[in-house]
Every structure is written in C-alpha cells, then in structure tokens.
Image (cartoon, rainbow, N blue to C red; front, side, top):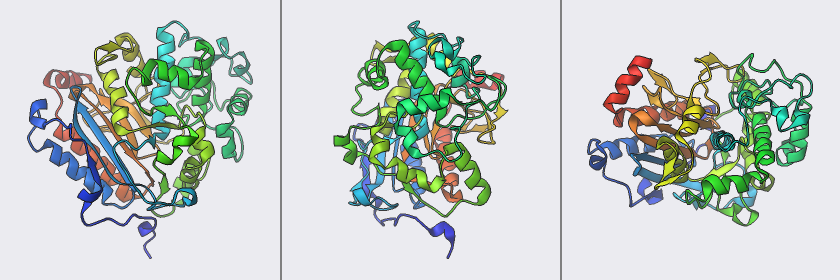
Length: 427
C-alpha cells in the first residue's frame, strides 16, 4: 500500500454541500481585479482540499479593507485522526475557531511592540530588566529584540524529552527557561524558537503591564477589533466549538522526523492529539495556541496593513508597525528550520522572486503555523490574508498545493504599480 494514502479524508462529489461562503464578499471588479479573480482563487483553494490531507479549511482575503474571499470547506471534526472525545462529525464553518499554532507568535510579538509603544518595555533593554531571574547561565545580555528575532539562543526546551504538561504549567515553563543554558550567545545565530521565546515574551508583557496576557490582548486588540474568539486557549465551556486537529498522510522519513522533533519538542504525529487535549486548549501558550477564524485573523493583519487603524480607530502607531516588520538582517540559514529565512522582530518576511507569501512578495509579512497555516499582510497588493486548516502533514502533495494556492493568490491580485516599482528597486 502506498504510505502516502494513509490518513486521508474522503472527498465528497459535491463540495458545495460542505462549503460555507460569506455573502458579504465584494465583487472583484470593485476592488480593481479581473472578474474571474474570486473563482480563480476558489479553484486553487478547492484543489488544496481535494488532496484529502486537510479535514477542514478556511481562507479569507481582504483587499483595500474589503472582503474579497471568505469561505470554509470540509469538516471541523469527526473525519480524520484519533479524537475519541469529539468523534461526532461537524462541518467546518467560517465562524469555527481554529488553533493558529505558531501564527500566534505574530500576535504575541505585536503585544510586546504595543508595550514598547506605551513605554512599558524597551526592546533594546535586557530581559533581566523586567525578569531578573532570566539572567542565568550566560543569558544576562539577552535583549527583548533577540527574543523577537529568534536570536536568543533558547530555540528548544532544554530537556531530553520534554513532557507536554510543561506547556500548561506557566510557572514551571518560565522557571525552566530562566534556568536554561543558551545554545549560543545572544545575537550570534538565528535559530527559530518554536515554543520557548513565547513564554518569556508573554511574561514580559504581563510584568510590564500588570495584566494577564489574555486581558492585555482583549483590551488592545480583541475587543477593539470586535473579535468573538482571538484568545490564547479557549474556555472549557466553548472547547466543543473548536476545530479538531488531525495528523494526515504517511509517516515522516527519518531526517524530517528528527528535525520536526527538534523544532516541536515532540514527535510530529503526536502534536495534533496534544493540541486536541482539554489541557492544551485551556492553557495560555503565547507561541502556539491562539484561537481564531480566518476572517478574524485578517482583521488583525488588515489593521497592521492600514498603519494601525481599523474602522477609524487607531490601535497602533504607524512607527510601531514599521519597526515590527523591518528586517533584523538579510536572509539567513535558520539553525532550527535549516532553511533560509528573513525575520523581523516577530514576523516571517516575504521574498522575491518567490517566498512564503507568493511571487514578488518582498514587502509581505506574517507568520506560518504548523506548516500549513499562514496569516499575512502584503501592502504592495493591499491585501491581508489567512489560510487556516486542521490537517497536520508534510506530505509532498499538500505542500505543493499549498504553494500553488499562495502563488495563485499572488498572481491573481497584482501589486500596485508604485509599490511594485519600489519593490523592484529594493530587490
């Protein structure tokens, strides 16, 4: 049997029966696009679903602040994976909350930048200015900037086989990281911090603001943006609403299996089940468990794209956003991901001629979440987008269709001419 046929979702013949479309989608012609733009994007979106590797998908794209595309397809639970507590089949809807995994880091980073804007945190100050106990075993020179840029030397939890329970024990996680010996000096290397830096950044926000992290998030972003979800974790009484995650596709080959364990701190195929647990869903994990819909994620990134303003209300200063998305260096080989990556203080940055956010996307910024989730803004195209899914896989077919969808979005929505010319000069 072909191992890549394992753990796939049966694809229904009539996908319209399991597609939820926003009736408020704006006609593409009104947004300066070709009449068939929406259908072109939808075809690529459906192609991704037809791989059978994503039980449920959501995609939302805003252009110039208006919703161009906002649809969900598939199932939120009950069609793939080992989920004994929530085995009933549920369709995926546009308002189904989904865990953003590492895309949560972008929101956590902007909370830190908001603290800096308000004078509560100095990004170039050492972490020990706010968390004195962090300065152990050579970490006394680590700055907030180093943490945001994945240059703090603590890319993974410093335990041989970390127990997942550490993720929902905030005090123990902070104490473990404060006592950790860094793998290198601050600023010496770039190595993606999958989970670790999020806890320290969250602790910085809490100590600097005097507020629990979810309360600070609600005050400055979730409530002004009118979010129904957008919290780290979910209340127990609402957890049944969330989409369930599923490991799909065949087993990883040995090199990828080792790399995934090093980055994630657990075997790749175990992470979806961990993420479905009530403990994970109840915890506050700044680097990995913010729950939102695709439409809500695009509200946040549209606010960033619009210079910090949403529906006439200013949430961030333009200077704050410019600082947050400015590259901290050129493209570098990341020592955790073993891929060339360009970071800002909190964001994955786009590239030209091709990058994570499609072709000629050097001005784009956002974040990836567990391989197939991506939330981003691309000022040169005047868009904010979010692709959210529940299938956790490294199957080549899924990755190829994911890249094809991002390429289709980038080619269907052209860059604004002045910005495009400026991008070409930068490139």
